[in-house]
Image (tube, rainbow, N blue to C red; front, side, top):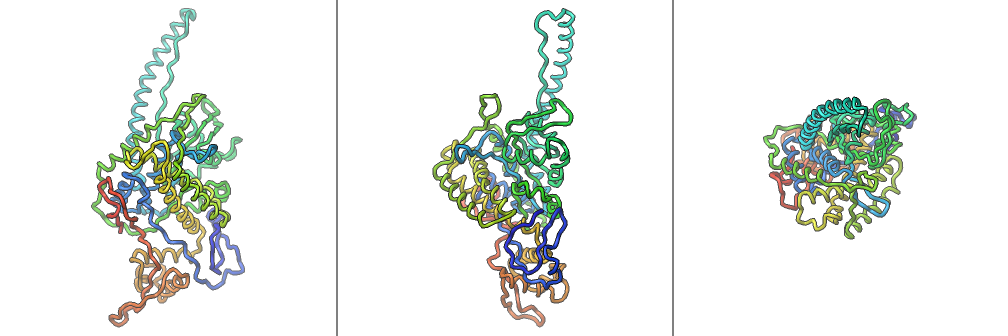
Length: 526
């Protein structure tokens, strides 16, 4: 991985993870005395209020039931919604620029942080649809086999009759309707996309296998899989030359694949090689890494009615039909922005462009891809509102200011989280420990004594280590000391408090009536 360009006031040599190997930039400073390194930016709660109903209520209820951060539900669910729209619709920003509903969402978290249960819950929403489609396909295949036997008999009879008249028509085999895949290479994916022109979802519990598959056939004349995946992120045409199978060459006019899944931080460091940063693949990932917190038992559960609402909403999204192009291929229906939405988009575009000018390297590349994210997210929000019969949505054929505002709010959150995760991937050991310490203090309500830290942070058990670590956070200007009431002899007389500590595991207020059984205001994951 190439160096992540983040501002730093530390005199400690910076590390750059390259294929998982940390290399010192300045070997002359190896023995320099550590100073107060700037910690990784603090986590901001996911803006759940930017999601339309009933999605918002479902995310809140599911997070409460599983005992996870709402991000773990929201990100894969956004990818599912994107794949349900697929190539049926696109949003026109100007004549030659129309964006698709394609998202690549990645949850970065350690083992045991509820990534798998959250993903399984979200995938349950479309697994029933997939199962029924495959059952219909298997029945169609049985009928096709019978038809092929009859065709063989008719063909033999036609030949015996010395080919008199027209030959019997060979039955066309049925095609399996697919909504998602889990383990595939581009070579295997191409025929599925050809048979399912609306597009697909790739869902993997561990995305390391997906990232590792890009160059599995790197020595082929057709090039690596990574280049084809970059085309799939844009919904562009893709040509794949296969080693075997018929046909050997497959051309997909609009290859659309959304992605969701999880990966551990250390695995992500190793999986993102230099080539993935340089190609722009990393910049296309919408990353999130909520702080870890202890699991607690909860009796909360998902109301079947709430889950059914989301299932019905997805049914309506899958019913969106693309137009038929002149060449018989699928042609997305293109919708426009209302004047108010266009004004909001223009303001965001200009502000993002100014931010990008002030960045360089990997963050600048990420900002160039995040430039389009509000439009993609607004497109998803718009059709989710439409499928939910939102009474405030006046037009179904144009993205309004409310949907664009939601897309911008979500994109701004992803920008902050991208900066955090990039910094985490290249943080020094000192910065990592400071981040873990800040997360511990936030779990304590934003304040902690040196004794609290010594008892709760195993890497700071040595005498004086907790006091020194908190002093470093004060020097980094993320908090200060405040006196505590004097009590029994030996009780600490100082307490460290973070400045303006956000609620790490809560959610923003929910200003609208909630259509599901759990209100977002009630979501507090301990």
